[in-house]
Image (tube, rainbow, N blue to C red):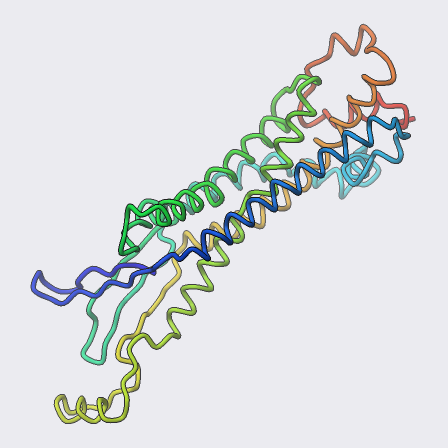
Length: 310
């Protein structure tokens, strides 16, 4: 929903579409966050327990190591995909930033007598304007919704892209790979750019088809007598036009998922291989000297150092 500014001069009417966030909304968001936290805690405890039992490498590899095995050059297509990860990460970051600043949607409020207001919003601008959509801008529920939007739709996805870029394009100490993999896996699950964009589009489309001000038969007859033209049963029409920013963010969400899946497989594989190598024996002189591994080759180096690589 968006407050619409008067379309004409200073004396024209003004209509504001307001939202009211109830306790149910905050409870749903808290339940979702709590479910994510509990799920991650259980996952990491399970991984630690698996390592503590000293199971064989093949039983601990998981999908990440399978992805890393596929990256060792067995397929030209896989090598091509790997070569595209770096540029795709950069492209995704550009899409998120540009899409966030460009116009996401435009809203017009129209009555049988004509337009009474219109407004445009960007994805980032919407974050700052959210409190003004509520009758109580500084209420706890309003600020909670704003913080939730900013964190899950903007901050987390940008932090995740930064971590992936550091691993893939930079150099990460082997002793930090496990921590980096845990952080990246958590942020990947918490990145909700795709959910927010899809929810925004569905909400806007629903607004454009909703009848906010129903005109019954008697009211329509009076309008026709007063103004001399027939009117429908919709006294207030919300016309919505999606902007370029929405399409760029949609593309960014798809690119983020694909690039994230590729990099996370390599990162998990590298972290698992280093952890296994540390548990089975100390690093030799050559491995210690090359402790800083290139991000794009970290998975291949780590897997090559593991017992199952041969």
